[in-house]
Amino acid sequence: MKVGFVQFEPVFGEKERNIQRMLSLLDVGAGEEADLLVLPELCSTGYRFMSEEEVRSLSEEIPNGRTTETLIRFAEEAGLYIVAGICERSSDRYFNSAVLVGPEGFVAKYRKAHLFDEEKLWFTRGDTPFQVHSIAKAKVGMMICFDWFFPEVIRILALKGAQIVCHPSNLVLPYCQSALLGAAIQNRVFIITANRIGFERGLRFTGMSQIVDPAMRVLAKGERDKEEVRVVEVDPQFSDSKKVTERNNLWADRRVDLYTPLLKI
Ligand code: ACM
Figure 1 (cartoon, protein in one colour):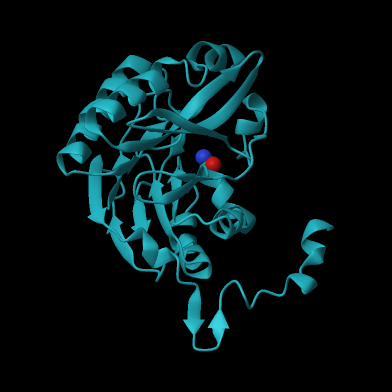
Figure 2 (cartoon, protein in one colour; figure 1 turned 90 degrees about the vertical axis):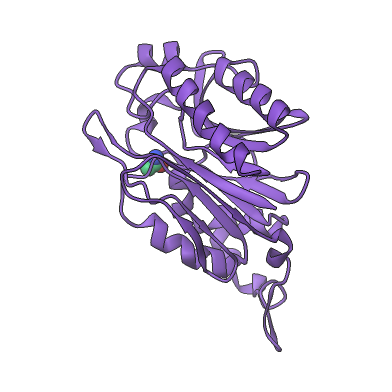
């Protein structure tokens, strides 16, 4: 299976321009025969909203919105799956969401559970469960950017059978790329972080999108400030073995009897 990330620089508020840029980069990934491509968080709108009016005018319904519909068309024509971050409107609420679309059309939506900083001014906290979806060649889950800071998210996705965690991002802190090496080995999953680059309304994004495998190897890493598409070959079943040593299994060795404080404190 071939998986990849699209790292690019959306321009705030220029939705049509951003969609066209995404499409040309997705074309590059499709040309490399990718089966799954991951785009950044809020990829068609930009990140730093400054008024509710901006959120209202740039947001869209899922799946009947301009960005999702365009991605569905691309996925159908190219015969691949795409995960992308979308600014979602749902009646009078807004969510920082991600969609999974594929050759069969719309597959799933995830709403970011852990909002970062000013996102709390505009978005409602996500209410969708952490779910795993079977696509043609793998089982995939989604989380969005700051969700990574909460290890429960990847843990639940891995426990539910995710082989690949797709991670649309707009990272500004310097920790994620290193920390997710640990998450990959601790859960034995592939993690595809698709980050954006550039400077927007006072925020600098960190680029360095990456694909990490269940043995903590970095299979591809983007540069800090360059638009790029990287596609690598992976075997999703590599994630299924939770054996660590002859006597250690990642799931069987868990001490859930001692973990009850996790749900109480
Ligand atoms: C972030 O969650 N966009 C930092």
